[in-house]
Length: 196
Image 1 (cartoon, rainbow, N blue to C red):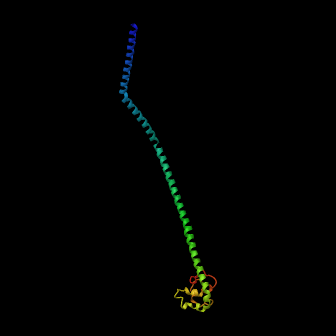
Image 2 (cartoon, rainbow, N blue to C red):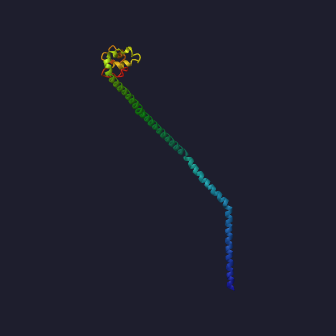
């Protein structure tokens, strides 16, 4: 009986201890709930202070950063201008190249081929008709009476080009730089009316 009573007392003491512990936990919880806004406020203030400190450091470094950015931007601008000048120079060189090789050479040789083509054509023409007009050289020498004005001084050169005795022929003297009668076997390059 006594033992049972002691067990009951121990249980009662344990319950009282647990009750006191529970009350203590409740008190701590209530205290935390009461102090939570204050703790949050302190935390926010701490964060604000840290942020303000970082901002102050950035403000102290801001002039240096701005100068560095300005220097980098100017350097980039100079590099772009240099690249643009190089591209323009390259374009100019390409244009000069095309002008030199496609305009000068092409048209130069084109007109030269054109000139030589007609030169050999008319030389062949004169040489071919020489055998026919050789027997009519007297008519050839005086052809200017009937043909020169009609063909603008060119037909006489056709006739007098291979004429032996055409010194009195008007077409022999129609060229300013050469004499058609003296161009019997050789070409005078500047004689327009003789096409030689």
